[in-house]
Image (cartoon, rainbow, N blue to C red; front, side):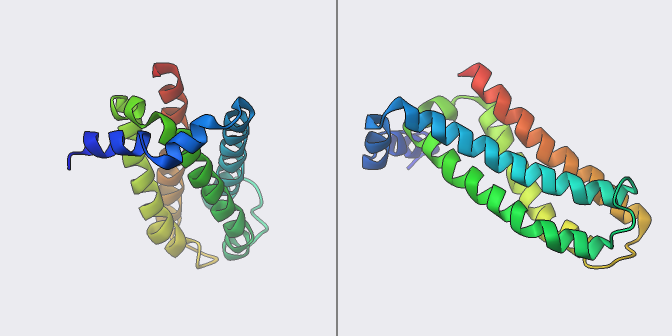
Length: 158
């Protein structure tokens, strides 16, 4: 099965039909949940990354700040994933031909890998190597904000 055929079957699935039959208010709620998830995720990531860059909350240990924001990062990610599915499923064929959808997907994979590896490793010590901490922060911020920008561009190209 090709990827295009997979996207076609997703768009014509029972789940897609069910979502399509819902009131338009549901689509607006899915968009609001998506934005809320983005706010939870990005605000938490920005907070820790600014600390890694040496801006703000410098009196807070990196490990404590990272631990405090982790649940908001994953709550935001869960909201984004669930609401994203409700937005994606009924329009899968439209997303298939949109190059920014594919850019966003690739950036998302990279960001999650960085989040689960390098970011997690750097935030497990209160005195991380300054060059590594700053590089990780710049990489993390660049990836997550690029995902948000790509997602916004997707809306303009549909």
